[in-house]
Length: 349
Image 1 (cartoon, helix red, strand yellow):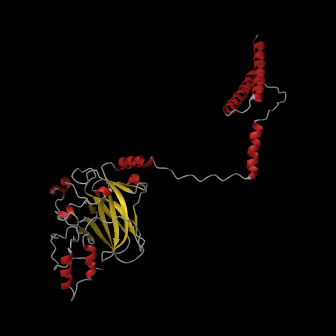
Image 2 (tube, helix red, strand yellow; image 1 turned 90 degrees about the vertical axis):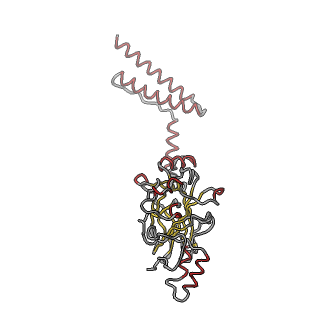
Image 3 (cartoon, rainbow, N blue to C red; image 1 turned 180 degrees about the horizontal axis):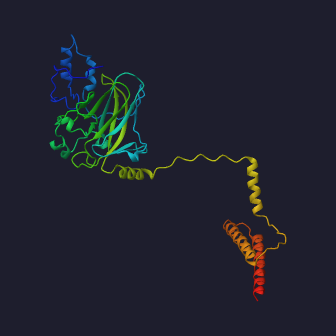
């Protein structure tokens, strides 16, 4: 396996305690060239390895592309009610509380060892030239005991969830250079998932200060060449679910359920039956002379038929269809009902 440790011969101003957070490197071009000359005779590892460990200078690019190795970044948004972090597919944004681990799955189509760099940036173009830094309160020593990491690690709002001193995790950036962006670099022997956490909130007034942020994930080889890039939004807050629902509502209402497939058109035979049923509903039916036992039974039956015909009349009237025939049948049925009432009165006497 490739040894990612830093040779003791390299003198770096920003490294004082590399055992805490893995190998933390900020190599200037001059120092790199000098050390490369010293290692020409018998280098401890290929000099190209140093390329990926150099801190990127200036605002990072944000163009999203999968690259030749089909780099994919996935965040599991299922069963989010049981998780401590949430992911909105609609907004492509993570909602997570401070110091809560969230897992990101990285995939690419090669078995070669690769690096994934995670860089936190401001989302708005007007803030693109400013790097994201941790607030004064959370940068205080009391929040970093007993580790006492280096300044550029303290100032980075994003951390690997891997235990301090874990192999393959590098913190890049210089606290003394405003154009040196803070990033977390993770070495992978093969595609896998990795957990991160934020150590500052969006609401921190002296840090992010309520400005929207993104995390840029780049796939890089040992030389530092960017082979793929994806951007995911992030909101670090105390109530992830409340804020996610509010943002989704503001962005376009509640979640829309998948559209149900259109029902297939009925076969011709069924369509014919439906048309015939509608024609039968408008037909006038003459009932044969019937003998019904009980005045109450006869009255209840006529009452139901009258209510149904009155309902049909209301529908037809609303769409301006003829109701003359319907009125005649209603009047005839009312006459029958009145006759039955007369019979009931005679019997009562």
